[in-house]
Each structure stands twice: as structure tokens, then as C-alpha cells.
Amino acid sequence: MWKLLILLSLIPLAGAWAGRHWFWSRVRFEGMRRNCETTVKDLRVRMGLPGGRGGNETHAAALGNAVRECGLALLERDGDRLAKARVKGAFLTRALPALVGVVAVFAIFSKRVPAGWAVAGAIGVVAMWTLLRLTGMAIEWRAVARGTEELRATRALKRLSDEEEVIRCAKASVWSTVWPF
Image (cartoon, rainbow, N blue to C red):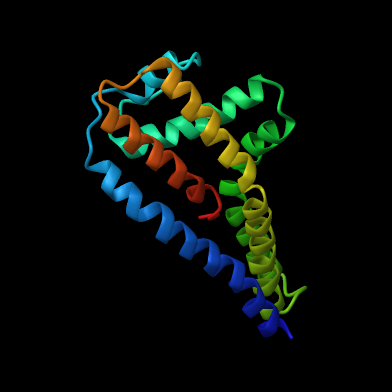
């Protein structure tokens, strides 16, 4: 039975990985080759948000990711509760696999739960969280639209072709948020 649970849990994980690879990885590698001469920090400031730390990247993939994040921040500032929940859930997305792994390891070593069920439970929890992230992609698309609107209004980039590439990377970066690893 636990083997069936593992197989069923791997379906959303494999789908999220395939979607991220197909829609985000290819576009990201192409965007990393394009220098837009504007840093992420400058882009955030021009969009009316604090510069944050770091943010010295100038390639289109980093700027596209920043446009999506700025769109989420702008939606949150406008009072959108779903955007606020999405921002707060991003941390849990990175911490959840490690936390579940630690719990599974302790469950196996304490011999309270059979190893197969501990692994199946861990994979199942991560798969459920991935499904929740997949169902929440609509707010990410709205954030990209809001960030794109603000990017075009501020004319933060010098060339129109750079702007189009950054927007393309921003749309693709939505897929980077669903894969929990």
C-alpha cells in the first residue's frame, strides 16, 4: 500500500518538475545570456519598491524574476490577500522538504513507523504542497501582469527588445515557484 502512495505522490512532483524544466529552465538559460544593463536593485527602485540587498544581476532572467516578485509586492501593497499568502508561503516551500525529511528520518530511526510508510508520508506531504503551489499559480500570473504593467509604465529598461525578453522571462519564472526543491 505504501508503494502505491509513493507512486501516486510522484505524479504531481514529476509534473511540476517537467513543467518547470520545459517552461522555465530553457527560457532562463536564454535569458541569462542577455545583458540588459539594469540591475535588479535599480529595477525595484524604479518600480517604487525598496532596493533590497544584493540584486547586482543584469541578465534578463534575474530581471524577469524580479518583475514577478515586484508584481507580487505591488499586489500585496494594494491589499490583495492572496498575494500576501503567496509571499509568505514561498519560505515554507523552501523549508518544507528539509523539515519533512528530518521528521521522516527520526520516524525511521525511532522505529515507531515502518521505513516505507515514513518515506511515503514524506513524499506525500511534499506532493500535496506541490499541488497547492500549482493551484495557486493564478496569483503568480496576476503578479506578472501587474509587474509588466509597472515595468512598461516606468520604462526602466533602455531597449524595447530587452523589455520583451524580461517580460518573457517573468512569465516563465512563474514555473520556478512550484517545484519545492
